[in-house]
Image (cartoon, rainbow, N blue to C red):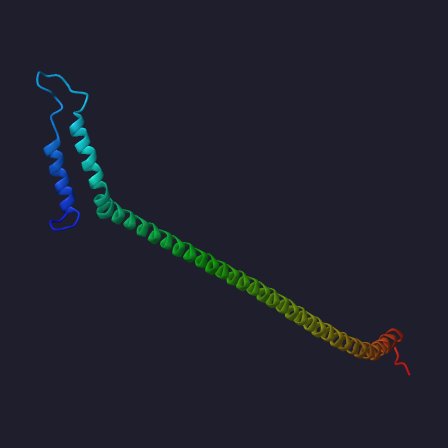
Amino acid sequence: MTKPGHPIALPLSVGALAMLGLAEDAAAAGGELVLVPDPAMMLALIVFFVLLVFPMNRLVFRPIFATLDAREERIAGTRARAEKLAAEAEATLARYESSVRAAREEADQGRKAARAEARDGAQQQARAARADAEAELARAAREIATALESARGSLRGESEALARAAAATVLGRPLS
């Protein structure tokens, strides 16, 4: 996994070769399994392990942990930015909803004012039409009264003439 010439490649390859050279088969001659390790071999492996801990820590574990820490910091920064953006989006949405609410209220007030104005205009037109109708009725009543007076006057004159003619016809002589 490591590139040749990389600082980690040398300790790992040396460690792997040393482990292969010191390892024994698990099975002993005669087919029996050896459960107790050789003390010299055990001591060599412990010394080899202790010698490899410090270079491995410096060359492998610290860079890995530093990378993981940097990754955690980037994730935390990204989360903080995401939370900030979410808060800004919430504020923008609240402003938008507020402006929509204000626009609706303004439109409702405008509609109410327009209805009231139309109602007032209709009432004024109805009052004007009623006043015109009443004036027309009064004029017509005056004309009818005038026509009736003139018809009564002409009927009086004609009725007197008819009555004289009928009396003259009945009496057989002209009335003086």
